[in-house]
Image 1: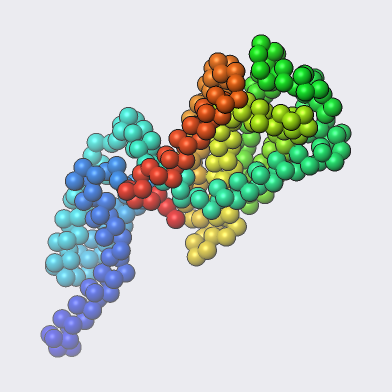
Image 2: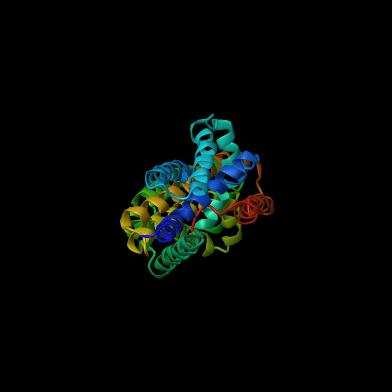
Length: 340
């Protein structure tokens, strides 16, 4: 083989080597460049998690390039990137305060937007569950006792008078009436949120059934008040903490559905890789769900007790709903998305 042929063969090997691995190098270089410019908060959660893997892949590429005496310029580039990456991977680690700032500063909202399809699915399931509970009780009042725990079947039952039902919504009686029911709903919904996420791995079917059952309970109670023309007052009472609490349930259910859907339909990825990618996004969403449930508990414990009129309750509940919508779907869009 002539010297020209040998040179051409070496260049061909170098070009092929670059084409096979260049995408990972460029991604790593982009992560390093953003960090060096003080823009680490713009990194997506997937990029942060991928950093160690990309760094190890780079070192492997550098080792192969040296052993095969590939293009000197390519080796210099890989060595420079490896040096810059080393300080990022093994340098000072991000503290909790900084991580928390990144989480609320866009990480959480990006993770929620990344499961947008699953949120719509969970919303449809929850609406269907509410309708099922409502119409089952409307058709046969005995369904109420099958859906609602017996401990809450006092005056809030089918056939109760308007005066009795209104008394549980307003005034001092609410502490003995729906106040207890609200505490039950919060405890129950917190459990449902955790289970809806945890059961998502079973192709999301248990998560969907759990959402339907949970919302059927609410639908049954809604019918009791609707039969006496108290729909608005009941929804107002519920909205103070319900817009936050039910939103948390929605996100938890969507997170579970996201995991299950990714396992059932992994696309070009392996089932394990699909589950891993979905789990990372869903876990971020669930961290925020815990925060939302704490907020809902505070609203239920204080705001509901202090505001004794329907308009005020709708105002608080509506404001909280608007706040969550703005944060999830309007905040942090300038940053990279956290996944597909």
